[in-house]
Length: 303
Image (cartoon, rainbow, N blue to C red; front, side, top):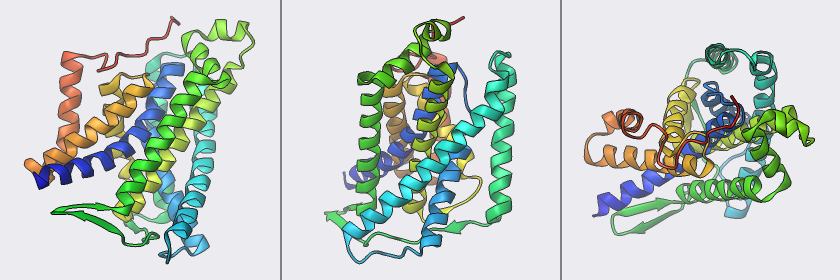
């Protein structure tokens, strides 16, 4: 039973990170019907921006928790802004000029951007793994043989707060209504005065900033990052988006957590060497049995 609860905690931790990344996939798809396969690399860039901020400002392990939380807030804020602007830049350069082209063209462009970002980061930071220092006190909560670290609690709390805020933004604000209207029909949205290109840019900004938070938390949790990290994490997050229903924001949240749980329990009960296989097995099963996902795919009314 102790193994079950330990893997439950581990799965929830990594699952919430996958959910943050999956939100970017599902938001962009819901707005412009595009699978942004460069999104995983934005997550990776976010991790490296976090590392850069830590090294530039000389952060070390904080002696007290409030100071460490202040560190984290500053790191997350800078990473979110940089990656949000990067997301807008990717849209402006790689997607907007070909928005009316066949989807295959956009897919090829997305893969090209992915390779460009990987290689730029490799040239700047080098191909070796980079270590992130521990900025939080080493606090653990032990219940029998089950251990919960402070970092796991923070990852879950930060991710949950951001996902709830995003859901509130989309469902209960004027910007959210404009986003939903744009997702339904670009032409009609323009007719009622919505700046469609501005909404699309905002969607890329929000989705990329969520990926940045995931990247920073991923780096602080594992204490090491590599320029290849975005590829695998991005595929798992895409699987989470498909599992929940591509274009469906609550579905992406639930899908990410389910993928994390499957990975955690698979590593605990079968083999940690096979943990990356479980997400893709789930993807194949979902595509075969329920291709619209658990919550249903968000279908646009546009042709």
